[in-house]
Length: 283
Image (tube, rainbow, N blue to C red):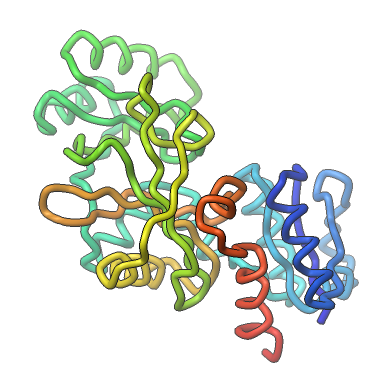
């Protein structure tokens, strides 16, 4: 089986996936998309192998290289539809909401005035996020009238993406959230991400600590229901334990797992490749 990996940065995760491919006798070709030319008149689809594993960090590189490789007739994990949905928080929430998956109350608006009104609608305490982004960047907790007005005013002078005012209710939860790793129809691992003492965000990129999370029936059910709304692939599902039960607030399409492997003791990169072999190796 020949597999290509599309990437723009080599992180621990990409190295781990490559090492896991060698153990499984998978012929994996590493393709740095920044060093490639994607010519629409070039019919050499074989350079992408039988299947392509999408690992680009950059959202637009991820999306457009996936579109190109799929256009060459090669299967990509995750595919274009999944990448489009998970690459935009609003698109994700709309898909989850339509499928009846529990999510935080979410409001989107397109002007400073209506964004402030949304903040008031959410009880004068809300989380504002960019619709596209990761690692907890550009996310703000609005806890007062003055803070909300200042943040919203600043966003008026930013790139137009930040004038899509995406807000969620502040969910009362323990000082942690959950990241569940899903490959196809299986939850392969899960971690608690513990909130650091000096930040309300739980992202491990911002100092959140990863520890093993048991995969309960409730967690498995909601994580699989969530990923079924965005496609068949490999995902990281982010959940919070609210007073009314678990809610899903994001789904990640190119998930990191450097801190999750030692926390869980599970060979996450190996199981990701096993999924690719079992689900797509004979298709």
